[in-house]
Image (cartoon, rainbow, N blue to C red; front, side, top):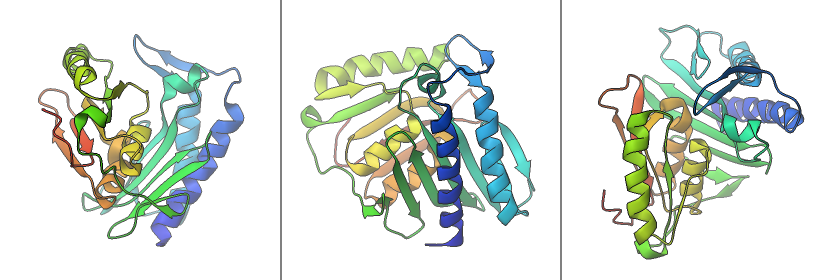
Length: 248
């Protein structure tokens, strides 16, 4: 395990312990929007991750939901979501995660996703075996959509809702089950683990899925990530086992 992956694991577990200690307790809200919420804990979790990573790698950059830190010209950039599934966290739903990825010259070389409530940690590095709590994982071998479970993510924009709901309606008729679970990081980690067969979202941020992209690809799956046509710094994503015809 490289020093980069080891450091990402350490930071994710530290942030996870911090979030777990505050789960179910009164929370300070920075912004309560129509379909989203920003917590003080988002900022504090990212600050903790930033501190642990920049202490070891002061010449690196950090790009995350809470802004940019470090050297923006660095070839190494950490891509961080300090709480993926903030609304779940706020409402006491124990389904959220910390996502940390490292890019070198734009290429993802390491990734960690940590679910602190279930103490499940996914870790992967370039050319390495993807692991869940130290055990190798692989995507599902199901080939029939009628036997598959698919997660469809819908962001808070009207465009995302208009794209996502018809897709959900179509897939719910043809797949075994469709889900909207509220954490893109866990959705894509579940695809890598074979728990889900596919995850689809029309408008997502890189920090939500960066670590999971490498997980899915190293687990034998396929990820199609494309820049959003109109929303800056947003992407559409289809992450799957690569063995299904989703009809997209």
